[in-house]
Image (tube, rainbow, N blue to C red):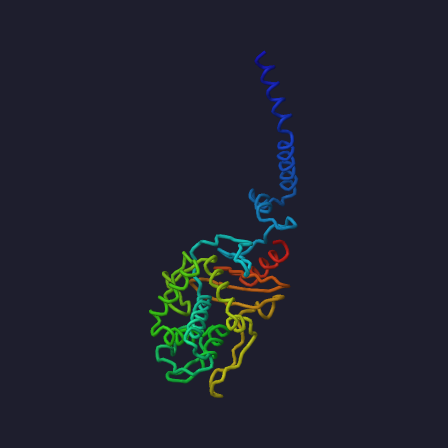
Length: 305
């Protein structure tokens, strides 16, 4: 009798949960078929595709980046993320904050962008990418901004930091205060250019929020989207800046924002693109295949999110 009671209970359970059991059986059958053909990449593949599926049920692309995020630039909603709160090193994407702070400070002071400033000696010969500034050279602020954002001039970033903040240390404090206002909780800036330091760090999420804020400034958007620019300096100076961010040259709708690289931080990219009335911002950190990562993620979000 005991065995019959157990069988009856099992029968009732099966009848009650037939739909759920059928779904489990279907998933197990699919797993067996894929396994049999040697296509099952990992035990996580099917759940990952389901969890990250878009409107058409398409799974998010695989990427090389250690951390990444895609947001809607209008409302900041997160469309995709991978380790987005993980500590990362921004390299020259730091200059997004430097440019934004410069533009905001000048607007607050009602100071023109085409004014000429004298280059401080501390900005001459700075390590890394350069627009080859000379001490006491008079350069327009707008030319320094383009040289910093397109050419990624570390000397231009240093010059702007000293001119706006009085010193690079004080400017870094301004950067951190502004980041806190935006809501960044995993960011600490030590310099205006992004030269590597263990204590100069951010996250993909924080960098996306900084980029979103910066892209709300019309002048910043114009600079970030420029394919090239010619500065008004003496004829013997470095005047032509080609945008190193290939997003603006290659990607459909690409309109910014900034690349970054140091050996220690790896390749970082903050990319943006607009299609129709929709603007996306994508951040990939420590990404060996940086541009392809960003293009694949933005394609995925434009098409499925």
